[in-house]
Image (cartoon, rainbow, N blue to C red):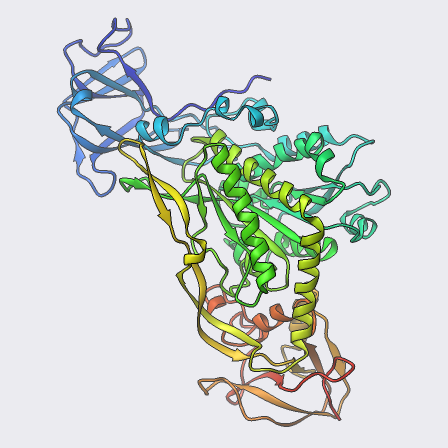
Length: 632
């Protein structure tokens, strides 16, 4: 079926030098800006891209279902807002020059129609025509290699101007690729909380999974004979280009790209993590929860299911496809077609960090080869905010790469460019890790073992970072570009990203945490630990252990060590496990970096203090030969 190609929101009709169209009621003598809209569409033109003065038209003309608003002798930056019943609200930047004032400069700014059925934004902010034509060209002829593999529903199914691929279209597309004799298998990665949409996951592997009835059985059959990459997109529903790119990547992996990579990798793809958000075209999940702030709390079914997928398939690398917002109110547009976020923290080894940087540089090389802009994501290196999936992964030794295209607030403007940017980056990343699969496997295995080993030893070198701030990271400095929103012309610049490398507050990590069995929070704590696949052990009634406790009133939160007897027993959570750092993010009461999203169990309100102390204890000795605490 032929697709309705998305047009730039600005359609410029330079009529002054040619014969006037017969339906055009604007006199030949009119010069300057003329805003054309369908009858019934409201128009507001103001000075500047932001906080300007609303202007009144010099004259108004009507004819053949359109209204034309003439604004004479305007120079500089303008902003035009158009809206109407069953239409998008569209805000467009305009630059008026002396040259444009010498002709009849007509802009058709009629906003597209919407049926209100969802899968589309309600408003769109657009850049200047000059920026689209000179800096953000979105024409598949520029990328012929990729235009051939872009076969997802956006490119093949009719849709409204800014409507994204619907859930039924996504599911039908995936089913059309699922042949009985290939390396592609489709499973459910959960169900959305509001509309009960399925969350499909496509698994590519040389292993025969035909007998697996669900994702868990598939993971068991697939095993760990080679590294697994989990490629997850559209966690935020209003960031659609990443999800659309993932669909085309699935088709490519089902063909030639899969033939080239699957001997080295298993690849799992979740093209749309948040179908409810996609239908409502909003960032959040049911209950207005940001899914990328729920990794510790696990309040949403979508993220609980995602955690189970991660636990079952145990990926060495997670790719996370997003989009970011860039303002249309400034004169200069910074950022890039791709922003790359690196998945490591101050707790990771140099080998782990170096491989992350190596991946990012391969992405940058591929983007440059395709004449696309790139830079590191704002705050490149993670904080310890494990509510975010990036930090959650790296704190347990899983590599993580964040891919962000420019798009939030832009509807489907420059959509082809955004999709190609995601595909170029994902391809470069997958090819590099396939070529270095053994190296990545060894680094991740060593990283996870390091976390386990460190968790067994009480040392001043092993700290829980409680508050980390950013500084410029000169080591990651690289060339980049910024675009003038008035002319669209790019300027070469040097980019120096920020990184969370300034530790403002830290605490020596214990080797274990202890919760009394008779604490009112115990049952809730155990349920949350089970969701995180954090192991724990019960010690019997009457057990005595030398421990510190968390004091609600002291600045360092700690009491002196003392012998504590648990009359009804206690639960012990040792840090000598892969998720030992995640355990600390939950147990420490005062991790500043997760406080805004209420990440620790105290911040969540799960654990309450009494008599000035929290019912959380810490063991500050090496674990014994059995990898456990000493108790009597």
